[in-house]
Structure formats: structure tokens, C-alpha cells
Length: 180
Image (cartoon, rainbow, N blue to C red; front, side, top):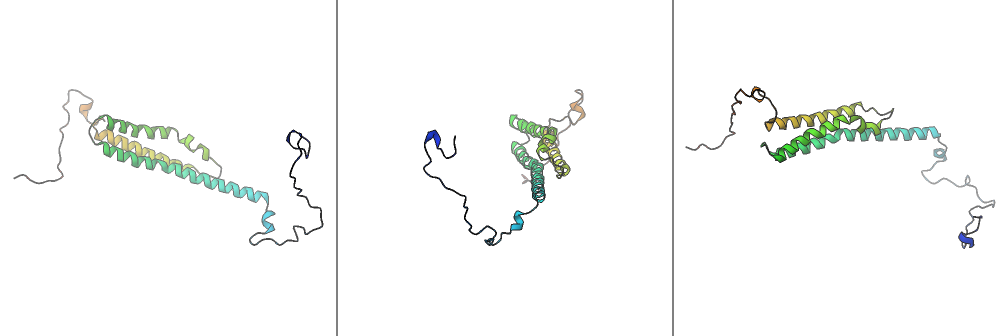
């Protein structure tokens, strides 16, 4: 396409010429607006790129900490759901309990993949990874505790040997009114 020609051979209807060859005021003769200095334009490119790298490293560090703290929300939600499920063995309580066990195990297996996007020479990922692991281990402990309260963990000798009698259940009362 030739310069100045429009699409399909039609000429341009409007054209604006932005070059001015007159001897008018140059840009150096015009005062800078308030808050602007020409020194900011003349900054070294390396300092600008260094500032961008520092800002990116700071952003990566913040995101790594956000991801490290995410299991805490899951821990609170799972705890509430387990409390709502009660201590009787039924499909809902077993499903929630195994979900509470499965999620931390999967998260612990993928710690490296979770923090992979945030690897940088300026970002220390050790502390966020340790927090992520600790919170997921807390979730795992919560699931194991729920298994124990449901009576699904083999914690007595009678669970392993069928000839032994099961342990006596002891019932405690938290108070009430006496019936005299």
C-alpha cells in the first residue's frame, strides 16, 4: 500500500501533519509543569529496572505469604464442618473426616509446585513453606482427632486382638437437675 493512499485506492479524506518545521519555541524553552523534572526522564535505566525487579520480588513475597496462610482458612472451615457433623458414625461425618485428611496430604505432596511461581533469587520462600507445611499438618491432626472421636482409630488392644473384650465406655455428665 502506497503512502497516502487509502484502502482500495480511495484517497484519504482527512490527514494531519504533525511535523512543524517553523522556528517556533523549542521544548527546552517551555517551562516544566509543577511536579515534573527533566532529571526524572534522564534517570539511569538500570536503576529503573532494579526498582521494577525489587517491586516484583516484593509482590512475589507477599503472594507467597498469602498462599502460605491459605490453609488456615481451610482449617477453620473443616473444624466447623466436623463439629457440625457430630460424633456419630454416619456417611456425612465419615466423608468430611476423609476430606479433612485428604486435602492436607495432597497439599503437602505439592508444596514445591505451589510455590514454584514465586521462586526468585531475592525472595526467601523457606518461612512461607514452613508455615504452609505447619498449617497443613494441623489440618491432618484435626482429621486424625476426628477419626479418634468417631472411634475409627485402633487405639486399644481389643481393636487388634479379637479375643480381648472392648474397653468399658465411661459416661460423664456435665451437670443437670437431680430427680428426687
